[in-house]
Image: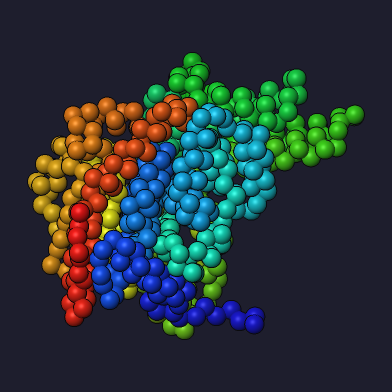
Length: 534
């Protein structure tokens, strides 16, 4: 008790090993139901890429159909980035009940409602924390509107089904935004498929979905300050409640036209210092007014604090703020981080979670212990798929089912992963660039990639000629990453669910064949046997 040491734990943590071992028993039973007899269970990982609301809905469709076909029970690891993580987290909070999940999804998009008051309340509450950042604003004021829900679950809620092995072991990831130059240089060009892929587009989305992209962070700050200032100024008139004022901000930000400009061509704005002084003074003046309801005063004060903090975070473009448990920790070979966090772009081939975070045998990177806070952002910013999370040799993954929900070229994730594996000397199937270019012109529903060593990869583009025919572009336009949530009517949601399910159903035989192959390949003494693949 009271020790400040951080223990050395090489390889996988014991909790993951125990959970995976329990999962093997469930996988073996599932394989038997699929008519694949094996003495040892091959390790299968399912990956979901980013892609905003499109990825959320499509990933739910994939998981639902895999459950229906008996395939999900044969999966050991389940990983995702960006929009797919919304669906994956729902799987665990609902104990794997996909029928209930689908019913809830359809119900939410039938109502076409968004509880702004509740979302605002959650955001204001989050703003009281020292670690408040734009991630909180994004989650409660953007994602909740997109998905029409405010999940109350936490990672700890997943503990029971994971420990018991009744559901696949989930792997989520973040990347260190403070080290952005290193992973930005390493990523593949044009890798912008996730909802958080393009920083400029995100800025545009948060502050208005305006038709022109904003050039840089400084102009973004000006634009946000102008909107927040208008919000504050409106409170000096008729004194509407905070919820109404934020609703005006939300509605104004969803207009399609750029914000007004002054004669000099610059967006209207107020510098941060002056703005904060005005807000503080206004808040105090209101508190000094006679006959003011004490409860209302507290609500207004909290609201103005939220507005101020959001303005500050916008000026710094600050996302994913969290405490760094290694801050000011002693350096030395007997101190090392035990962490589940996987950071992409380390200089050495990662063989464990701690090594993926850039820490092996000791805290070698002084940056890790010199920062009081870390800023963790969507891993889809680096690679819009969680391949790096299941590729470390210690996880011994034999078969990867990669479901790509990206916008545009569905093989950018393969290119980025190939480059990542080449730099880190990790086995991954090699595909010629000319072949990838050819595939991208008319994607099929499934590609099977195999190398001399390493896992077999099955890659499933969402929009493909098998399911969409010659209408791939039309499908892509309908489900563009930055379509407003209001365009997702029930029939649009149902069509996307059906498409994602079809991609799984139509490729079931191929999946079963590869399952049987890897079971026989990795356990040759008692090789897998199949009675029938029909």
